[in-house]
Image (cartoon, rainbow, N blue to C red; front, side, top):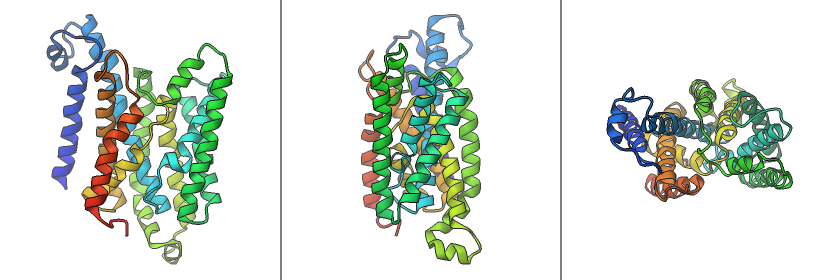
Length: 324
């Protein structure tokens, strides 16, 4: 297990270095700038690598980790292998919070205020979905309905406004790391660190939910309280990602399944491994999105699906009935 953890960390580091060397702009002597960060700091090449590419790579790692952990919390708290923030309405609720704040001139994209509004929207949407559902099937179908309604509201709001910044907000809503700046990392890093710490702390109680609510009550725990705590952490993590780069689909669903195949169903292990897998997938997807057809960028959501879906299918096929 330690070897797997080291291997994942090494892969993230390797692809981070590769990502620094790739991009739309040609950089001469690129490796000398990468392996000597203080070399010719005033040059354009140095600025491209360390002021543009490096923050974006760091953001991809942090956001991928947030989405991976959020997926673990979504699936574990609902005891449903199909649950993820996009299906539960969490991502769409966060988007509504951000768009409302931006249009009312209360916050800007990626700010601390945007994270707070996104967290409120995400938490309310998640609680709404869960309160309306009476079964695992209803949880998914109602979640899809809530997400569709909230996504439609965001789309209508963006299409009806004529403000100068409407285009950048619309671009953000599709999910992209192109708008990432070093300031974005100031918001993402503490949220990811605190979210991971709280997720790791409550993971053993989330394990209990797999026994059923009645068994959890007989053991002296309140299953609804466990879920509420998980939903708060989930909403905060998704708020940080959505408020910074918009909605990135599928990653939060795929990463926990891949991690579960590697290390089993214990949620504390899943928090770390799913974070690492999510970071790795998003890092590769973002690098491909800006390097395959320069100077154009491919939609990153399509690439995360293209990368994650085959791995997820193969994992579930080989993993058998791991949920059962």
